[in-house]
Structure formats: C-alpha cells, structure tokens
Amino acid sequence: MTKPVIYCDFDGTITESDNIIAIMKQFAPPEWVEIKDLILSRQISVNEGVGKLFSLLPSNKKKEITEFAIENAKIRPGFKEFVGYVREKGIPLYIVSGGIDFFVHPILAEYAPFDGVYCNHSDFSEETINILWPHECDSSCNNDCGCCKPSIMRKLNNPMGSFKIVIGDSVTDLEAAKHADFVLARDLLQEKCVEWGINHQGFHTFFDCIEEINKRIEVGELTC
Ligand code: MG
Ligand code: ZN
Image (tube, rainbow, N blue to C red):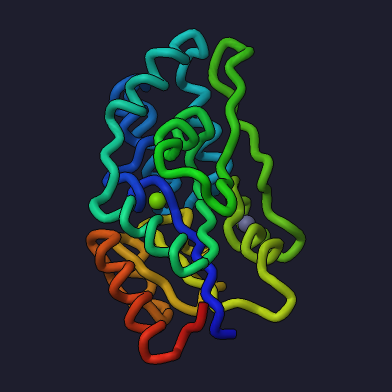
C-alpha cells in the first residue's frame, strides 16, 4: 500500500473557484441561491441539487454559458507543474469532478492526457439543461452523489491496494475523503477533515501538493 494514486477534484480545486456557482450567478434566476444552500448544508443530495440548478437554465444559452465558463475559469497556480511532476513519477492522476462535461473537458484540454476524467454529462436537447449521471453511486454508497467519487475509487483501485490521495475542497469530496489514505484539502473539506480526524494536510497551490507528495516519496513512505 505504498504506491500512490491521486484522485483530484476539479471545481474549486484545479480551478480557483466553483464553475457551477459562477455559471448560476451569471445566468440563473434568484432561486438558485436557495438550492445551493440546501446542497451545501447537505439537506438535499448533490445529484438532486445540481440537476435542479441546471434545470433553471435554458438550453438555447449553451454557447453563451460554455464560453462564459471557459473564459471565467482560473487555474490554481502550480497545476501545470503538478501534472508534469506526477507524469514524471508515473503516479496515476484521475480527475473526479462533480462538474459538467461541457466546461470540464475544454478547461482541462491543455493539460491532457490524464489517466481518466470523470464528470457529469449534459443534454441540451430539451428546453432547459438536463444533467446526466454516468458515474452514479454503486451498491456500497447511498449518498446520491451524482458523480460518485468513492464508487470510482473502488472501481479503479488495483487488487493489491494503492495509497489513495484525494485532493479537494468541498461537499463533493467528503465521501471520497473518508475512503482516502491521505487528503490534500482546502476550504470546507479541510474543516471536515479536522472534524472527522481524517489524515490530511491543507494546501493553497499545487506547488504545496507537489511538496507534500514528494516529501513522502523521499522518506520512502510512498514508492513510485
Ligand atoms: Mg470542488
Ligand atoms: Zn456515492
């Protein structure tokens, strides 16, 4: 269990802020705020909440919303170097995101390829945007995650077991963090890691992430 595998969140982790929130602020009617608060306080599931949020947006705004999301996204410092570092070390890097394909893939394109990019899908064929969930919870998870990070981790984990590193910031990472061997956390996720006694370290940039992982490789805690 010393071979690391990294599961990295997208919104608010690779990007500096949450793209769904930015899209809603720009395009949704005011009731989106109430839905967002219900998701963050975990009164409704991420799956239900995100579906409701996007149903507030007309499909004919696809081009405008996509362009806005891509232009608005700011990549956290050090991400490019981080991708280079893990590639050089041969550490698998999976992007696991509660975000939506129409902005996740174009924003990540210049850093690709990854070992895998998992996110929710979108359908613009009806009057309002419909979110599709190709990575729903398996039988071991009943959180109605939407894009279920622990289910993806179970599916990808090699039979020998790997040292699972989760990098994230918020509500979509909580279940993943519980299944991790080590978490690099910021914001709400960091607070929860403290509260739940999860093995973690805070971070601000991906340079911090490189340092934390490299430290463990140098002392022989991790091998790659
Ligand atoms: Mg996030
Ligand atoms: Zn789940």
